[in-house]
Length: 198
Image 1: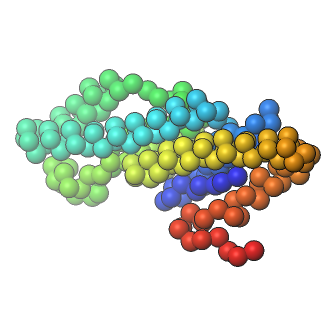
Image 2: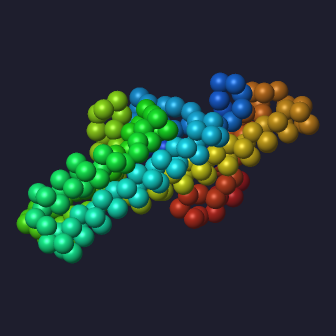
Image 3: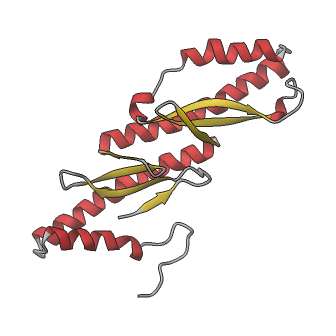
């Protein structure tokens, strides 16, 4: 069982391999203290793809805004209208793949003249049931997607180990789950350090 806290989220988003109600291992995502959901293989791949797509949309929107203001010399209100009203509405929604979490691309701005495009930054809003939890940098959203894919592979390996322990070594299911659960203590830490000597 492996775990991956989404860096810089500040919202308690974590991803890990965990036993599903049917007994197999899958990807579990927690957001804060109240939201926990599981993904099977196909759902995890779609979720990760949706996160990566949203991160790219956020960066693309900012690039278009900069192009319109700097390259075409449009005023900020018109450039923002093009990005928000015209281009953003053409974006396909991946909300179903990430439900109950919604990742929404947006553009943030530091204080100052709106015509100074260096003041803008790409962001991804994180929402649960329409309530905003905060914003992430697109790279943090990509890291979250990578964590989902890592947990997916871990789930496959955890499932294989569980089956081996129950079918070949003949451990009961509870003991086998405890052994799989203890596995994370033997894996390298997320910070690159080796596990402690036991």
